Image (cartoon, rainbow, N blue to C red; front, side, top):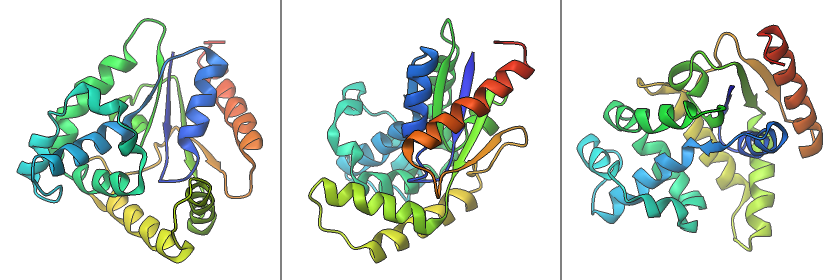
Length: 211
């Protein structure tokens, strides 16, 4: 059983994917973490994530980098958005993601092109979204809680910039798969969003006679 969870930054897709993994007893892969590792490793090598050849070299990051808490920062997220634009980078990470999905029993993957490119035949697909304003407020609260001094205006501008890059890139742009269920979390609590996500996935699995 493969479940694809896609959506823009700060939509709640990661939280929802982890909750689904716990509910269905499946392993979960945050594919965005792979691209964050590429961006960070590119800079570590002295390269520029906006340059395709530099980002491609960064795709050969050491496995232990995935455990680095630095990957969870806003700066790493911005690097990931820049590095992920390049087709060679996406191709370099394709097999790693598909192999994770193909493990016995299935898996849950969250990202931006899971339902459209990585696992187009997934048994259930969610596209988790939210208004820019709601996502910015959510991200701002998270960062303030972590003790970071950031402005809501700056976060809103950053989200708009990332959304433009993610939806406008030529390689696997962020898009809702035709057969994905849409979940707008703008006005939902985490608990409400998770309940709705489980209901939407259950409905798709039932249609495919999996549950």
